[in-house]
Amino acid sequence: PKDVGIDVLAHRTDGQDGYFLLMATPKTTFAAKELSGKNVTFVLDTSGSMRGDKMTWAKVALVRCLKKLNPKDHFNVVRFSTDVEGLFGELQLASKANIQQAINFVEKMEAAGATAIEEAMAKALSQKPRGDGISLILFITDGHPTVGETSPEILVKQANERNKWKSRIFTFDIGTDIKG
Image (cartoon, rainbow, N blue to C red; front, side):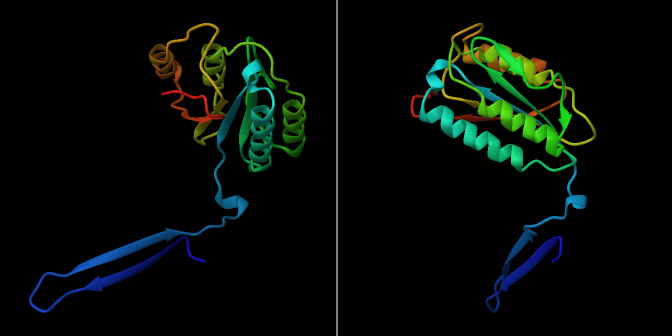
């Protein structure tokens, strides 16, 4: 019930220095009022190589993430293939209506086209945070860029340069054909 549970195990043999193990464990459930809002941009690869099971599982995962948003969160969903499309023009409050609109958007996505990672990342990084929470980008893809910039090194450099709000970027690779 406390914010952090602490346990200490100590041991000392006579005449020798002792040692201890300190275990600090945060609680596992939080009330909504205890959580700060966050800014989340979900980015989903809808290129042709995502057809079939990859697209199905990516959509299932994204819908699950959308349903886990908290009322103080702000979010957007960006879909990309040859082109890039954001659901909203900017981050929106995670209201029930906005989450449902996002779920409908995700469920209508189809896999077709090339993989424009550069443009998709630029769109995600352009999302101005709302409130004081941290900014996260969850980037879901199965492959390598085929449109625009294709060099991984340059893409990373560009992302670092464009990341003016210090967003934390997490990539989730789908499939078994991802390389280095």
